[in-house]
Amino acid sequence: MTEDIISEVLNSVKVFGCPKLRGRRGDTTGLQMFLLVETSLEIDVNTVPLEVGIPGVVGPWGVHVPAGDMAPELTEKGSEFQEKLMSWLNQEGKSLDDVRPLISIDQPTNVNANLVHALDRLVEKCTQAPVESLSYRKLRVFSGLQPVPSGEDDYDSWMEQATQMFSEWQCAESTKKQRIVESLRGPAADIVRFVKMGSSEAAATDYLKVLDTAYGSTESETNLTVKFSCTYQEPGEKLSSYLYRLDKILHRLFLKGGIKVEDLNRKRMEQVVKGALTSDTVALRLRMMYSLRDPPGFSQLLREVREEENWISTRVSAKPVVNSKPAVAVPMGSALDEVEILKREVKDLTTQVGKLLKNVTSLPVGDVTTQIPCVGTAKASGCSTAATTKGSDVISRAGIFCYKCGEDGHTRRECQGIEDLRKVNQKLIRRSRLAGNFNGAL
Image (cartoon, rainbow, N blue to C red; front, side):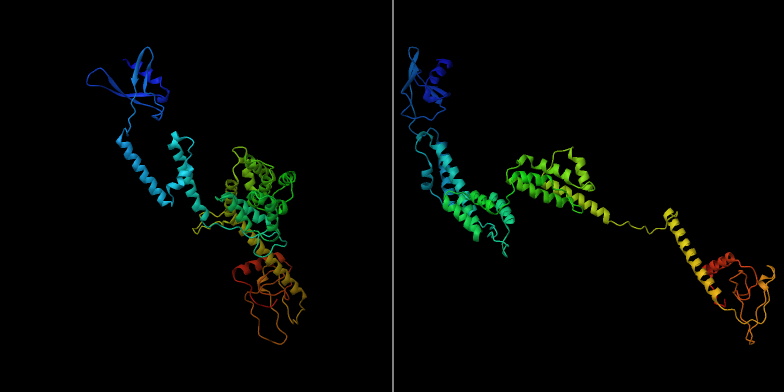
């Protein structure tokens, strides 16, 4: 018999599926041969024919199905799996009686597949049981009363927390409804009770919807869209605060169904670029980057805005550090400051001189017995002094000059020369800088 004839005979038997020839061995007489065949389908003794062959061509060949296990290693693997299964069931507090109801008996030839599905459902049940028993963060109390009593939340705060926690709860639907009801008081609890009485099959989402109908905003999708488009940054408001205020309106618009999830980032970025102040440097950066990349999410956008604001505030509050080393060249700014200081000093001295001149002109002329006039500039320093009427001691003339002509050695009362205020001012400035004015009679 050739290989082709053997394959043709084996493929003609449908209960074998796609058989493969694994081995052959002849008997002691050399007249017969035993073929070891591996089938792709499980063998049932009741369905396997007693003989196979091609009528009129070859055969018939007898078919022998081993009554016992064909491979001892399979028995060892099965016992090992059974031990692991029993050990795992004991750890989970389960038994084989808990597994048997999960196995379907409609298909007795597919017991292994049913056992696998049953184990999957049992594992899922065992892993979910501890989650429901764990402690969870309770919702804050909400009653719907106005004004809001102490220790309770207003509707917006309560609904925001309930929406976030509802998506994180991994428990049965009945447990979710219980957690929502236990946080309600007063009129809010009555509304949920009415819904429960009207429909015993109401879900937890139905509780949230009816509370939103009773206490939520009555703004429609169109009104929220217009409000979102007309929300602008106020003068003095940080861009991060404006972004947070804008996203709250966008979130309400999303809950009303006025915008899709995939359009949230794009819509937010468009309004930030349009509604931000033109003088905001952070918004200017966003406008420049808007067309160069895809719009980021809320968290990433808020982080970028806050980092930019922090960088700007740090630059503004930073003070320049003064170098303690002596400078080689005088900066232009310091030279201009020196000129301004000198101008102020000259102005102050001029004011003082004017006051002195005003006081001198208002003084009465004293009793003078003898006056020696000044003759020209040659005798300016030697002008005679006036003698007192009562023979008092001669007044010291050291450091005295005339406030009329500017010459030394006499006072304005004794001066007979020509008035020269320019010369007087020059002497006043020179003495004020060097040694100061001497005390003496005017």
